[in-house]
Each structure stands twice: as structure tokens, then as C-alpha cells.
Image (tube, rainbow over all chains, first blue to last red):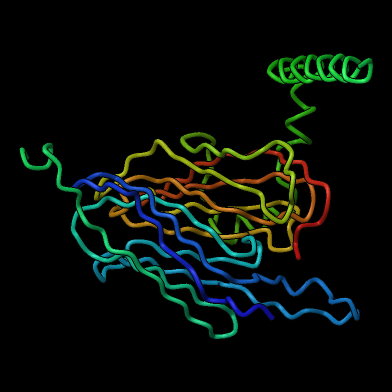
Length: 118
Length: 160
């Protein structure tokens, strides 16, 4: 089995201004096995996949996803979020074997002249 | 270099053929070529939709699904979903549901949102067992259901 399972990252835009809608990309290393394939010896490979994903922003739940093994290996998801505060965005993935993986990134506002005039 | 000339001629003619194909796909008569079989869900898919949404009406519109017509790799079919429905505190897109007619799990995934996300967009990659309709159903906080569907051609079974 791969040894990178559970590694991941949350990618935020380089520049974030207050109240803008930003794109968030969340990536996890996970095999996402359907349980329908076999190894070279013909032995079925058991299902092993992320079935629940939760997104929090400053501790508040803003989104949650229900997955099957139909989501591709090393699952990627991109979605929007309105950046209303400087706070961490945390994504937690849970798989069918009890694995729980959390990764986060901090929303920090870019200080610009436009920002200063607000 | 006669070889490169013939190759160039070939590429040019095939590019023209592709352009003609793409152009004809825009017309209603030639549409089935790229639109695939009948858009009507079969009984199994209908059953899944009924289990998930009950007797509520699913209307077409307000959702766009961007996906290749032919998926180069059926293990990783990229989906881009967007909606022009309102995204306010009391009227927002509560979720996107992904249904793939010919996959082992017909109901592939549900993405649930709150009004805090600000815009209903979703970008992900899915597996496909074979050529199939992909249906996206957007559910609003008021309980309305809006959908978009696309037929995607694949070659190998990507459900590994």
C-alpha cells in the first residue's frame, strides 16, 4: 500500500480581499478503491475510499460532502467561499476504514490601497 | 521531405474534418452524435432520483456542467459545475448532486453547502464505468431542484 495516504493540501488564492468570493482547492492523497478490482493474483482488492468530507471556516461548518468510491484517486475538490474573516479553513476527510485526515490553510487579507480606503 | 508534406496534408484535412464535425454538432439534426442516446433516465436511475428527491420536480436549467464530450481517462473525468441561482442568506444553493447513469454507484456524490460559500461552483474528478449520462442536480434551500446533464463517451472501465 502507498505510504503517502492522508497527505494533502489546501490551496488558497495568493491575494484575498475582505468579502471577496475565493476559490479553494483541496487535495488529498488517497487510493479511493472501489472494491471492484482485483490484484495480479486475482484476489479482490477491498474497497477503501473517503466517504465524508467536512469544511470549516473559523470553526464553523460551511460545507460537507458525501462521497462514494466514484470520486477519483487522490481526490480533488475545488469550491468557493466568501472570505468574511481572517480565520483558518480546515478540511477533514474520513474514509471507510476509520481514517481521518485534516488539512488547513489560513485566510489572510491582502493589504492594498483599495483595502485601506474602505 | 515528401513525408512531412503528406503528413501536413493529412493533419490539415483531418483538422478540417473535425471542424466540420464540430460545426455539424451545433445543428439539431447532427446533435445525437455528440449528445449520445436519449436523455431520459432509465428505471434504475429514476429509482435513485426518487429515493433522493421524492416526488419533487426536477427542472432543467440554472446549472451548467462543463465536461469533455469524450473522456481521455475514465478514471479521472474532470467536472466543472456552476450555477446562476441566488446565493443569499435565505435563498441559496444547498447542494450539488452528481448522478452517473451507468456507474456502480449511480448516486456518485453529494456536495452540501451553506450560504457562507458565496458562490455555487464545484470542480472535481470522477470515475466512469462506461459511456453514460452525467446528471447534476442543484438543490436550493427552498427545496427547488434544477438540473443539467451531459452524455460523456469513455473507453475503458474507470471504476477501479
